[in-house]
Structures are given as structure tokens and as C-alpha cells.
Image 1 (cartoon, rainbow, N blue to C red):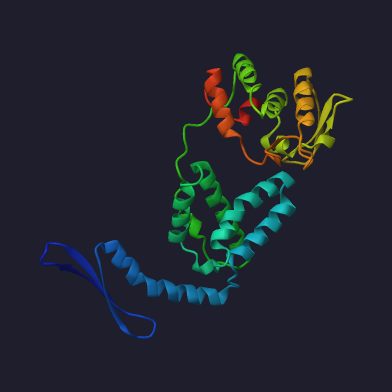
Image 2 (image 1 turned 180 degrees about the vertical axis):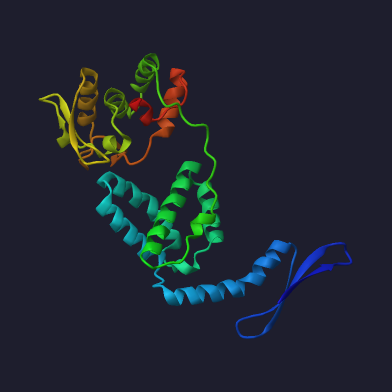
Length: 287
């Protein structure tokens, strides 16, 4: 097994791999780049290693590993966290579900990353990588894999972080502009309560007591319930939201008849531009 550098008469350089396949047949392949030749040369070795390792572990499919991971999340994390992770894992299962863990390589994950970058933002792509890494980490603990291919995947760079806090004047300007948007009830509730994103998205009409003027909130991290007063502005916005609600589900905040599950960054970006404030997120109201 060797790699030979060959200078062509036309001035081009190729790298020739002289090796043997799994049947013992001699194979010669030319590559324009040295790294390609080296990768081809390593394939039989990697295949042999994977075969040996697979014999020592219960090499399950990614779909099975993802199911075990989501079962663990459902047991150990908040319901809102579980629901959000289900949505993140779904496209990963669609892509890798039938593949054995030992056959998933960093190169495959990089290809998936490139495809996702054309569909969603860098933050969402990083979320995909993070959940996939978590699936493999649990699989390793359970004896289903020897290594985590996500360890070799680089995180994508994100845009400048959103401001952590808004001044009172900026909040007033944001709320004035937000009145013209569908998600105004959500935004004013976030601004007046400082609730976490998942607490907002998990809020149901049973949690809202208009008669007593309070909201009953289940903490997204420790499950403890607390009571928050409803301001008059919130009351008007929530009553408006209830009047226009589709009644297809119990969640207070919806979009196109479905419960909100993700950030409304697009809407907040437009509001920030019109209000003349820096970009912000729902989390900005917690400071």
C-alpha cells in the first residue's frame, strides 16, 4: 500500500494509490489532491476498525439511538424542553435514521451541515450538531458506539449577539410598534413578566385566570409553579388573543393556527428596525 506522486506531461500532478481491496484484488487509483489519495488509502483500515469495533458493541441505528435519547430527555428534562428537542431531532432522523452508528462519519455530518445551511440559520444548524452530539454521547454511555463523530465538527460562527437588555424607553418604543404585529400579545406578556421563552410557549388558557388577574406558570427548569400578576395592558392583549384564537389547541400563543414552538426572530427584527432599537430577543426582557 503506497501513494506515488506522478508528474504528467501536460504539467499536471496526480497522486496514485496502489493498494488491495477486501477481496485481495490489486487496485490503482489516481487523485488530483494528496488528501484525497490519503483518504482513499485509509478506507480499508477504517472499515476494518469499524468492523472490529462493531463486534464489541451493539451497533444500533441512529433512529434507535435517537429514540433512546428522547426517552432520556422526557424523563430528565422539562416537558417544554422535550418537545423542542423532538423538533430538532426529527430532521436528523430523516437523514441518518437507517444508518448504523459505526457507519456515520464526520464527512457525512459535514454534508448534512452544508445542506441545512441553505435552509436555516447558523444557530439552528449548531442546534442540530449539538443534539446529534448528545445522541452519540448517550449511545457511548450505553455501549452502542465507541466514538462521537460530532467531536470533529466545527461550530458555525454566529452573528453579533443580541443586546442583553432593553432600556425602559426602548421597551416602550418596541411595544408601540409591536401593536401592529400578530405576536403583540406574546411580546407584551414577555415584556411585563420576564417569562422564559419555553414558559411563554407552554402557557395554556387554563394557566390564565382573568377573574383573579394572575397567570400560573410552571418553571421550565425546576417545575415549581409561581403566580404572576396580569397588568391591564396584558389583560387587553390576552383577551384579544383569546377572541381570535383558533381553539385547535390549548396554547395561548399561536401562529397560523398552530402553537408557537420557536423564536420569532424575524418578527422581532422588523420591530427593532421600526422602533429604532438594536436587535433583541424575547430573552432581552428578562434583564
